Amino acid sequence: MIEKQTAEEVALEVRRLTELLMAAGRKDLLLKAIGIPLLEELRIEAARGKLSRLVITEDYRFILADYNNKEVELQPVHKAVYLLFLNHPEGIEFKRLTDYREELLGFYMKTARMMDKEKIVESVDKLVNPLDNAINEKCSRIKKVFLDLMDEYRANYYIISGHTQKHIAGRVWYERLKVITLPRELVKMEGE
Image (tube, rainbow, N blue to C red; front, side):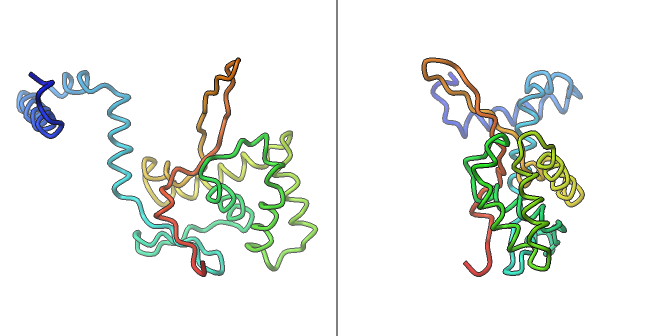
């Protein structure tokens, strides 16, 4: 019978059955039927509908336009890291950051105009060094700033987080990419 129903009809039936379980006071059975992993996915999907546009001004201020123009207050180095990952929606492996050194340096030079160039170069060299923990520290700080501004489900779209891609080409190997999952249509760079 369900095979002949449209997705919309199935959704109405799920809603009806959900209301019956709720009226019977059986949230436990409803949770068991849905399952925790699906519930988490649904919460993330619900958060997606409440995402704000991220406006990056010409002077590199990060503004959440739909959250009363709230500014995301980051240091220039954090802004540079964030801009690098925003510029690569396909993701970047931390161990391959040296391939992005010049791009990261360019972003840092733009966001830290008043800083000493030698310090900027030194900082970027630490960030791209796979034996240094600097990149993890910067990503943790970025995550904390977004978590201070919004709930964890919405923040998950704005932070730099892990994504593993499995490849099979004669052998199985994994690419441990770091990405910002914010839909790029929500990102506006002023002056572009």
